Length: 162
Image (cartoon, rainbow, N blue to C red; front, side, top):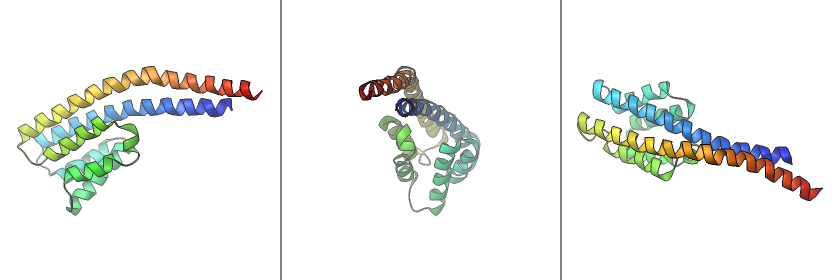
């Protein structure tokens, strides 16, 4: 029993830590996206394919799926990102505000000149930085609490059963 509840507490804490890591990776990906848009002459599908090879597995599959969907040409980027962000595993580790920031960014990509797109990407990065700071605080505060509560709840159940 103790091991089970301890594991549950550690799993909850791990989700807080993964959110922090995901936000760091998203910021890095947006920096790469900005560089590609401003300095390269490639289209969005090629940029997303390149990003897929540079990012960790969770974001890699996100960008690769984006690349494939854009090549098919049936949907726009905002619809693709809406669908991808609202299914597991990304929906588990992102907040509504973060998903909305990325969807808003997707609505503007490919619609304006490079300078406007650069400003929109910088705004999205700024919003993700704020979310990162909040996630980091939550990880420090609630991650430790989840681990401790898992162990304590396991001990409580063992005492009550005994």
